[in-house]
Image (cartoon, rainbow, N blue to C red; front, side):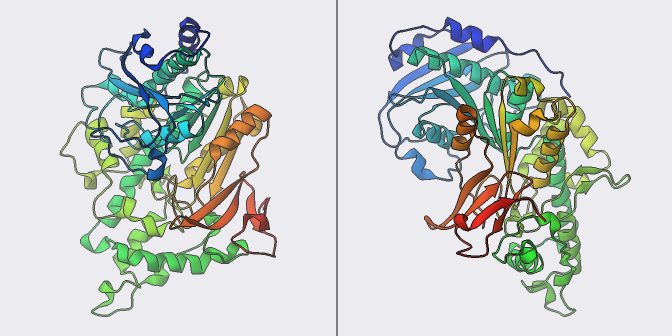
Length: 514
């Protein structure tokens, strides 16, 4: 684990040196702004309307409409070079009018390698100055790592911090005032980035949203290969996606009603006791082809998916398991090929061997190898966030119970360590909230209500002292909302009042589980 640095002074120093104009500067004048280790490559006044993704920046856009209706803004592009091997691209988007006086920086996914444009667009639509980075390399791959330890450090933690310093300075130059508040908003890798900021650079942000954080990154990617090995132990072990619905139905039949309400959602899968043996096919020549049952090798593979990754010789847990309920998205880690992000992690970060075969990975040594290669750069597992909390920092965590990539138990484990850490006990209970989301997949999507306004709740918490006890979430089909449900601050859960529609959040209250 890397040592904790002193609180950063660079951000304050640069903002203090930014032009203190009585009025906002012209957008194009920002090209002349001089900041340490920074080259501003463009400052463009952007007209209202749709934003076209730059060539080569095609990324998954969960809500394409967000890019089609932007207000006028000043788009600043910069390259940051804190080391001689750094090449960190950042973009800062500044609303031309209606700025709320705050900065919202947005996170990346997986290996990053691209500016997170949809999240930037949403920040501007909400009135924030927005900032995003590619973390110092191009492409969502780990192939940039061999021979470039500084680039790995940029990806791991430095790019986001350097971007934050520059974003505050550019905002101050454009508006004549530095942001009054600065928030981080990210999920997955973006969640890890937010926790890294709170831990390593506690002065950068007033509050952090960290969804489904991959904060134990070295162990999480090891666990991804635990599942890949399970379903590819032999050709007979592979579970075709056509069988996922039958497994999912069996899980719901066994566990849906345990929370007192049969609604197609498992409120807390930890209470679910499901053994896929109930789906084992009867002997027969065509049993292996049936989509309604599992062969014996497939049962064994499914059991391993539901089990924590462990070191076989010691049974020590490496990373917690995916939970019952997320079967419809198993192809993320249990598909026909092992997930590239984990394979590349071992190929290019741990072993420096592009021809390495994930089937040879030994789980008795894998986690130790991964930690030695990158734990100090990628992991955020130290629960001592006292410097962040001491300055009033707030942390909002969320995680979908049906997450198909990252075990939701990981977030519960991290939250529990935070609130029980001796250095911050009591303090963390006031400064941290965790929301577990029934039926939600990784960061978004799924059968349960999975759309909610975390940034608005965070802002009310910071500005008005209103700690969120519940978030109202919705689920939509073909663009039409068909269910709402409260998300409750852990360990509380949503409980039905007994009357009214089970698809209406008004008929639920947050309570401690029985």
